[in-house]
View 1 (cartoon, chains in turn cyan, blue):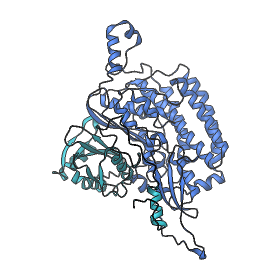
View 2 (cartoon, chains in turn green, cyan):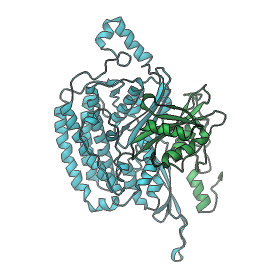
View 3 (cartoon, chains in turn yellow, red):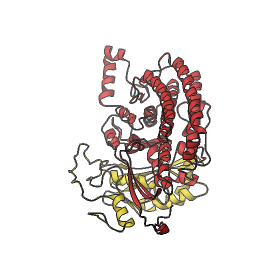
View 4 (cartoon, chains in turn purple, green):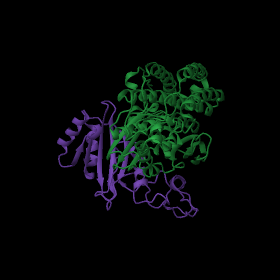
Length: 182
Length: 401
């Protein structure tokens, strides 16, 4: 059934779909990154499709290949029990793609992780901070050109507090924290 | 969402919101996670969770190991049920290799997987009881978990970091007396289950803390990608073991318990019932356990018998190449998913046709279950965070990788 969904998608978005595949039983469509939000909205909201759950969001770095990155969205329809995978290519020069946090709640953290690990920026994301690593980390460790044993510069202990504490001071108490960046 | 513009000037007393750091080292924050709470009195008006304190670079390490060397790393994801992680990874690579495990292997994976699920659920319930002040509930659950871990130790040789899965098979077969030992363990676990049930399920204090706290609606739960007991407690019967049966689940009879309200108490009840269902699955699988080899007959994947390695040049070369160059997995990519202890455990793996994975990405259930944490706790009391955080059952190793 999910193979038919991909065909349906192909008929609806003739120009936007670059490629489709069903290798190893995984129905996949490669779409342009400009049309991503439109395609996902269609998949989520169409009566006959109902892909209402975002199973997984990740990115693959194909170094030395153009376009270098592929952002991967595994969607699932809980009611129809079907899965499709949507991929969108992202180039190294312009590592930006539209955020889908308004379509799927879990995309918020998942996109933060992809930003953290691969340095893909999600346009429109409300809170694109690093999630697993710390703010001062230099580079994006899951990029293939990041050496596994690469060392990080020593972080001077900040006199300022960060993140939630800083925000609290600024917005709730009306006074910025010491050394605040806000 | 809660109204953050609270009227802080009630009855002429000037009050201001307060900031509270919970964690990263806090007895109730199992694993290490920091929650920054903005409080109005005892009401949480904003919650920001900070994860990553246990980040060890799992995915980067995997990219520099052979496919088989990934197994010890998967042990350290959800360290309460490492067997499920092992089998999930093995299944993903087998899909890429387009090979199938033997029937006996599938049954053993089912059995051991459910044993691991028992350990996962018992730990979650025991810790939950402890954090709400019921120390005896914890002792009972941990006693049952010890019995389960003894069983795991007997088969795999380790209690926690088992590394029992292999691509195309298993490290070894079940021990000869496994069925007998299971019979003993089963009786005692069921008795303890009764004890926990009597101790907690209708306990006034327990009910007061669990009922109606940490509620999430069905639509939100789906949108946030919650899976496992978290999603089932809202009434969605989503269980990969039923929806897309893998291993031997398609041939076994079991029920998927669902809740109705999506609160902490329902999540507790779902886990309670799942323990019984797991026991049911193991019983049936042991009866149906087919004979035959545990490893599939494929020299590209499975190490040859020691007899051949020591006595024939072909066997030795085969062994050498598999260990040093690794299993050669054809280029391709797959998203493979199994039902882990806390929900959907997915592996998105990409191979470029060499002995090392190009990418191993984990869809860890804890990560997605923790994502709506602010939705769970905002508007509630500080004390409600404790049972909510427990039924989410966040495992540090899995969420931070």
